[in-house]
Each structure stands twice: as structure tokens, then as C-alpha cells.
Length: 569
Image (cartoon, rainbow, N blue to C red; front, side):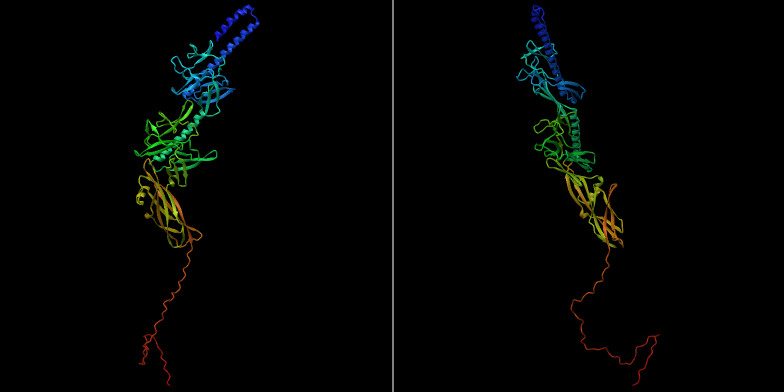
């Protein structure tokens, strides 16, 4: 620019001397000087914007995040980064022909500088060896000299011609800076290139999302691979989003919380699962993207990851790649990791709208929770704390009368996890260790409590595909015999307290019976002769013999007898 000034002055000097330095010529010289200063200021601003691009690309490549952004004046922004660096940027002037820009080079994996002449297509800026200039490593400077656009890669020490100046080129670099999205800031250059820098708000949200995902994975592995039958559902609460049912939060007794999103759209969901490979009979982790895709095995160093308590467990995280976060999976605390990929093998963008699911639905009942996976497999877990593992049910109720004996039954329901079922009550109770005791509370006495082995029953609930263990529901029946007292208050009930005991715990239920008065018995009517027979008639014609001796019966000693003689005729 100074050359332009010097040339202009050398041209004007004779005129000035010939015209005795008229004021008109002085005004023209001043205008020329002001024009040169304006051009220099414009190119200073242009080169400052180019340097700003270099700083932004360095932030993109390093994974730095924007902590805050503030528009201090129209089109002028102050950006504060997670690294505490501060950068001031300005929007460019729309409609001017861009000169400098950047584009992503898929061969090197970096953003590289481009230059554009007029309306022609942008071309790569290259060094003397023809290599593309990365936007992160080098900050080019531009100028117009001797009618040419020139570029320097060494802070102005050396300049190289690019192409002739048309005189209408603009000096803007940034076309727009959009920070309307709370999770990412979008930078648009005048050549149309866009790049992104995530905000810290996005980082905080994704941290929470990944924590929830990994808690789910740990809870799932515990539920599926545990050889301990004490994995029970402690509580279930419903989740609402935007006033609508979104799923369930299922708390386990071991402290884990499993979230089932059965009330949201699952087409963009990532499904994790554990499945058996029929070829070797072992269980492995697998992944599926969307409801229509296919499952693929999760790999670590090219090998499938076994799903046992002794092998690695997937841990989901996120990484920034050129300003966009993508989900990752690791098995060693993220010392090594890989992208979580969709059905086309592309990394899945990390966002709160993408959910990781282990089950598609949950069926909640008073006693159990049944979970269904994407392939239709169901798993049932008892919904109980430890004191509710055994349920004690009174079977039937009836009226009772005084001084009478009765027998009623109670049923004990239990769940156990084992490789095989117990065939008899004796085998089962050797493991369960339960006993039933009963006490008469009112006017009744318990005579006997006895198990009814013939009523022992076992149902299969589920099969653990990892441990090959089964969960069974056992039902045991106990008969309780009681004797009622001699008097019963018909305004009250008679009660028997039944205790179920195991280890150092017990459950009590009370059986109640309605007292009834005993009606006095009615004498039976005499039997009616329905044979139609009559006594036999004596047809012999005999009569008793007549005493003709004239004697009288002897009188027993000590008795007196007065005889009155008959009168003489």
C-alpha cells in the first residue's frame, strides 16, 4: 500500500510544483492518503478475522467448549471458553465476494484454508510443495499489491501472488454467528462453510445422560448375571415428560436404579442387550440402533465382549469431533474407546433425544415386575423387600361352634434361584429353612400344625441366560387343627395367629372365624313300623292249669298275714 502512495505522490509532484501547490491538489492528495489508510485498516481487519478463524479451529480440534457468549454490540460477540480463553468476533458484511475461507479436508482430517476469486469455486491454499495449509497450524495474511492478491505464511516476511484483484472483492470472513441453540454455536463463513463449537451446557447435560445410561447398564448386568437370588425390586415410580407417561424408574434393593422408557418414541433409540451365541454357548453384549435395525456384537480389540461378572462392561460416554459430540463406548474407563455406530456404521450424534434402552416395556404388578426386551425376551423380578419374599395366605374362612374341632390351611409362597428345581418339600425346605407356628388368641386352642406334602407345588418363573440358573416359585401348604372352647361369644370372632419364620425374621397373619351358637338337639321321633305285620294269634286252645290242692302260698318269715274265713252258706 505504501508503494501505491509513493507512486501517486511521484506522479502528482510535478503538478504541484507547476501549479504552485494549489489547495485543490492538496485536497486530492489527502483523499488518496485517507483511501490508503482505509484500505490498510480493511486488510488489518481481514487478517485479524483470519487469525480468529485459526483460533476457533484450534478450539474445535482441541475439544474446547464455549462457556458463555455475549453480544456486546450489534454483530460483535465476546466468547469465553472452558479453558478460560476469551475471543472477540464480528459478523462480516453480507453480499460481498468472499476471499478467504476454510473447508474440511477428509484426507487429512483437518480444516484447511481456501481462497476464492470472484464467483469461481474456492481452491485450497497450498505451500510451495503443493500441500494444503491447515487452518489450525498456520495463519495466512493477505494483501493486494501491484494489482495482485498476495498471501504470506510467515507473518509477512515473504509474499506469494494468488491472482489479480478485480477491485470488487470484499474483506469479510464471518457471515454469521448463531448462538440461538443453547447446546452449540454455529459459525458460518462467507463461503458457506459452517463449523460448530459445543457449549458447556451441552456437556453438563450429556454427562447426566451418560451417567443414567451407565447406571442402567450396571443395573441390567446385575439383574441378568447375578447368581444371588436377593436381587429384588424395591420400589417402582412412574416417569412423566411433558405431562405424559414416559416410563418407570425401578429401584433395586442393591441400590441400582433401572429406567425403562416405554412411553417415548424408540425409532432413534440405541438398544443394548445380552445374547447367547449358539456356536459356543457363551453370552455376549450386543447393540442395535432403532427398532428396525439388526443387532451387532459389541467389540473390544476386534473381539466380542463376554457378559459375565468377570468380564468387561460397556461404559457409554461422548467425545467431540470437529465441534459435534458423538456417543462412545469403552470397557477400560475410557483409556481406549470406539464410536457407538448406527446401522450404516456412522457414529451416533450425542444428544438428549437419543435414548439407550435395555427393555422396551415394563409390566408392573403387586408382586413382580416383568421386563420385555426388543426381541421379545421377558425377565421377571419379584417386587418385594426381603421380608416380603415369603407371602403367607390364609386359605378360606368358616363359622365355628363351641366345643368343636376344625382344620384350616395356610399357603406359603417363596422364590428361589437355583440350577434345578426341588422336587419335594423336604428338598426345598432344606434350602429355604421355613417353619410355621400357630397360637389361639381367643376361646380356641391350636392342637397341631403340619405341612401337607401332597400339596407342595413349584412353578418356573424365568431362566437366566448368562448363569443358566432358573427362578422358581414354590408353594407350601400347612394344615392347622384347632379346638374351640366350651362357650363362644356370638358377638365376637375367634382368632388364630399364624407365624411364618425363617432365619431371624417372621411374618404374621391372623385367621378369623365367626362364632355361632350351637342349637339344642331335638329328640328323634320313634321309628314307624313299615313292615305291615301283626303279632301272631295263639291257636292252641290251652289255658293255664288250675290249683286244686287248696293250699296257699307260704308266707315269708317276718311277715304277718291275717286270714279271714269265708262265711258258711
